[in-house]
Image (tube, rainbow, N blue to C red; front, side):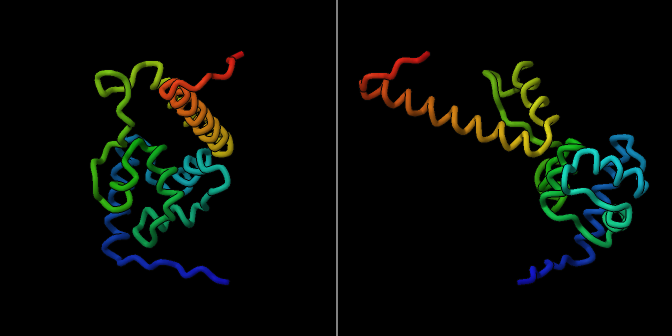
Length: 153
């Protein structure tokens, strides 16, 4: 079974390339394939790219797969949809947390810590958060309907 590659028109590839190069320059990252590929690969864990592939992205000859767009957007602190399509706001949106809609210092530290982990470790954290949320929801339901709660050790 072969996967069919999605073709993009030259205008989309060129526009992506311009957004990528502009963002690299704004982050003071040299727009050179080998340097760019090395920086990407430090963050890509299992999704590394060759300098040749990086050159194709920078020259508007190809657009990376979505999973690589996400890595780029995190690295460069830009919105993945903006980087890929030119849509949405340029700056990477962080979830609104805290009471004033901005993340607290604790929340910022937590997010930065998670983003600093390897992808497998991030998945473990994601599963842990989902399990804790489900547990809290269950406990809240028991409290709301008056069911006896199990003892918390």
